[in-house]
Image (cartoon, rainbow, N blue to C red):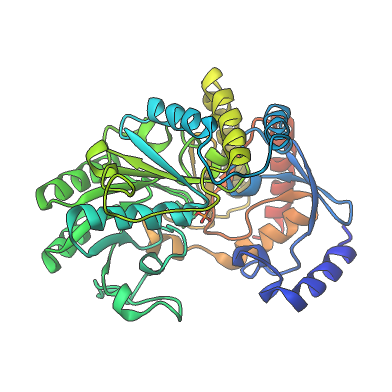
Length: 428
Ligand SMILES: *Cc1c(COP(=O)(O)O)cnc(C)c1O
């Protein structure tokens, strides 16, 4: 497979864009090689500027549940943009999309739209702080909630409970309000509540997708809910990735636990930049202009983005059986990868939630970030490179989740497995 044009394009990009990319993971840092520059998408495929075609298991990191260039989404976008791209004034589309979300998510009475997942979680945290009058938050190692200051805090040394920033530019004074806990470990959350009586909220990906795919145990979520209630803290489910992916109602469709606030993104924009946060009326009413907690956005609720999101969500609602089909295909894929790995004596952990799938080159089950870090990232990098070279585009890190679209057929999946089997043979 030739990458001449992408190599050239990458060199050009690096002259004017730091690292040549607008989001770091795109640079392929953890797997090596040059990222293919994309010319277009075709349903379940990506085509790069060298003319290479790939089966796409990334789907723009989740949003494109109907694949690239879905005709219904495309038509809605085109119809809307002909009336103008943006007004900075209310439109009917915002209320329509809000109604769909409120109807689907029992935890959401009211919702506000923003432009990215980062903004959604950042705003939800501010609201939780404003509502409770407290400053500290609890997050879990390995969960990603966007790149805002309070949330760009991950694993400190094993014993550290109070967070240290993991990027220069994040003041220690901010980071110290972020307490860290271990995923699926309720004792570590109890320790946070013992260390601080100033905790506004606990924020969690109820199905973690940013340390690879690591679902939370139901019992753990229940205990988390109880702990928040006992301490007057809010529980925030960050469903920017799992929303409309794990099920029509995200992780909330698979658990009995009800959060106080929910953040959404990715799928609700249908590929356009959209985020949202919502929750109970009494909490959401604290938001300006109704309440004192300030939050705003010039392009928020952009009509074209709303139209894309609406078109996608309505299609999903019209055919809920989609999720069973997507899950079956995701299972077909990971079972195939697992059997290919088994036959070559390569330890592999696999999991699926709806249209999300994950696999770790790891000999033990992965329940938290430390487990995930125990994976063989060198082997993953080799696997990734070899598969890319054969025309299969997997997320470029061991710690990302994969996505099935409705355009990812059984035939494409079987072809992927056949190639993965050959590649695994070289990775023993
Ligand atoms: C992607 C993601 C975000 C950040 O969303 P952006 O649109 O990239 O800012 C936040 N939380 C979770 C769970 C995500 O997967």
